[in-house]
Length: 155
Image (tube, rainbow, N blue to C red; front, side):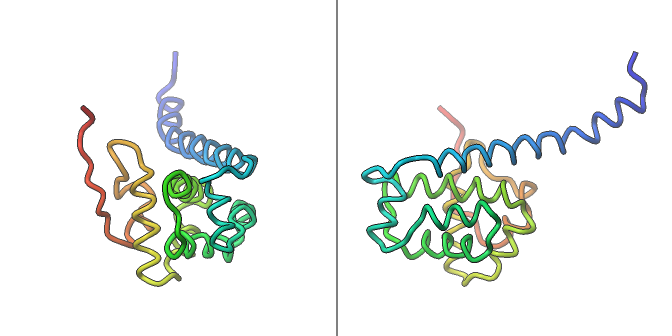
């Protein structure tokens, strides 16, 4: 029979377990993207067309380099990403948020101009599956810009 103390500990540790699983999944997704070859229309190829070594920036951001993360933010805002490359960038930004954690990610994003913060938040909003990003999930990052994604219920 489970004691009250064991049950309480299980409830307390459950959110931590999910947070660790989310971080692990994000790291797996980031490593997946780093292993992908350049493909026509992909984020790495589009970066090259814009004179940006996106793969190198991503490697730095995965290694917790603040400058690399900030440069990905600026490229997401100022680059000419579209289609597959833009979608991949949104997924990567979301995974980087989970990888870095709310406080560290928000600290780097907060140092960016308002237009960059808005663009990054919009990209992460886009990447979030239904029902979307809640203010309680990554609250420091969430508060850095308005959220314009309209969430509707699935058909």
